[in-house]
Length: 234
Image (cartoon, rainbow, N blue to C red; front, side, top):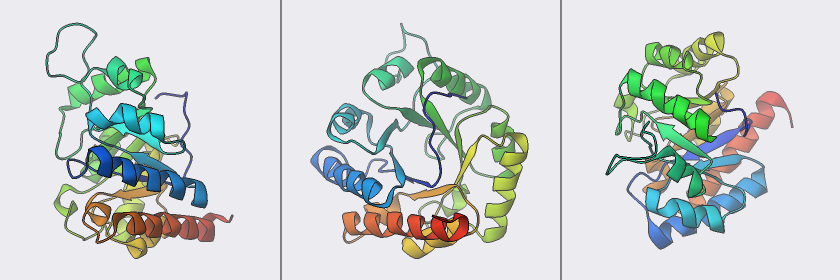
């Protein structure tokens, strides 16, 4: 587990996937930067690799993560994403094992170790309680408890699943933060998940497909702040 950068809850992850890039991505990143400062909520943004350098230079508060990287050393590996290159571009972390970019457990373990070596925070996706518990033994910084079947559906995990996965991860390693995602479509969903005990939540479609992405982003981050303060106090 990388110890250099501590991301304390509450926080929120925005995953643009391949929906946004270039100028539109920069516009959303700046809106996220403002919302992060306004509500005192850390925001993780996982843009396209080609946008990492620019977004890292032109934002102040958001945390720029790569969408993926490969556990290879400097040298051969055409088409691969090198950990050192991700770090040099300005990213502070990396997402691993998303349902749309799955990894074997062996490669995932190696990638987490390489991220630790170069100084990148790891946010690792798990699609079941069993997988979340197994990945917790690899000591990433953050685990995303995101059932694959709910991704992009507008349906969120029920409270029982949120409590069970969070508890399972914390039993293995209390230092791991647990982000509960999948199907988050508005501020009400965000509020419910944080109130259920999650350290964080996040979305792709909820913001990317909103009529006004920047307004929806603000609504969601505001909901994080309200729910967290109600549970934990200001």
